[in-house]
Image (cartoon, rainbow, N blue to C red; front, side):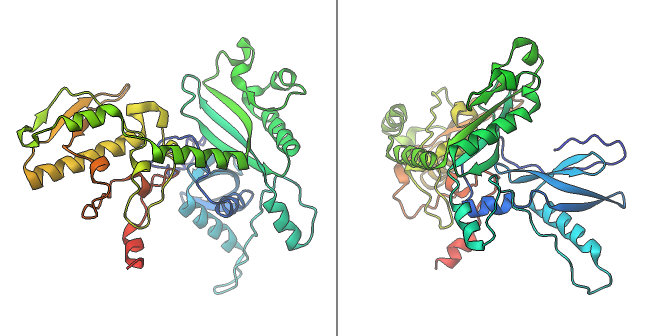
Length: 377
């Protein structure tokens, strides 16, 4: 939920169902540029029968949310459904009569490098020459792994990206009164955590601003994914499975077996359902948090399904263990099926729909695999 400062009205933003994650390039450049192009658009929205006008101030790729600043000083975040309605409402305000053609305010594409070419061909070349991405990462003081990354812009040269990063640092409140002097004549990265004690002692959040070489990032992501696909299951998981010489002796109930995490489980065994998208395991929330990672949640659900399969088809008891995450008010369950995805990945009679490939790490939504499967028939 987004918080607003108005006492006269309440603006509620729809929030992503997925927790914060370290952003990877989840959208194609065409999609990303299109979403960013709405920055600067004018919008309108009714609150308590009164119309309020505003402007799209920022786009957050990770959650695909647009920040709206209203003329009265309030602000909120909108998802695509709300944003499209707000733009339509504003664009329709100029209609003179019913059936009149609606005047659409053109989207302002936020090109980080000023465009001086007048031809469409030159603009296309300029868009294709974006080699560096400037990122601003905001994270809680005590947990750098829960960063909220925002793409400041993309640039043709390193010099342009460095200048944009410096401008972003100068305009970010966490660097106020000390940043420009501390980082004088220094290229990024910039971190507000490096500030003097008296300036950062009361800060709840820190900000890092840095430049990413887009080509190198893509190569690194591809190398990381290939390594994940070639990885082996944790040795202890294989050992535990091998010791189940007589699964029929398993009893339903809680055990004290050790809990193992297999972070690359789904990378090794892509989903066989059409429509899934294979991604780096690290693209999902809290990848480095072990039991607190989103990947482990899906692993537990997948193992639960295999435990149910063994119970229903073979009568084998479903064994489980529990644990409690820090600051959580509930107990999490881990299931120990006689065999899981590692053992059944090549079994075409099993359709494992509980799979990371079926979930978009950037908005938490599941892919419409039914329509995809129909189109493949």
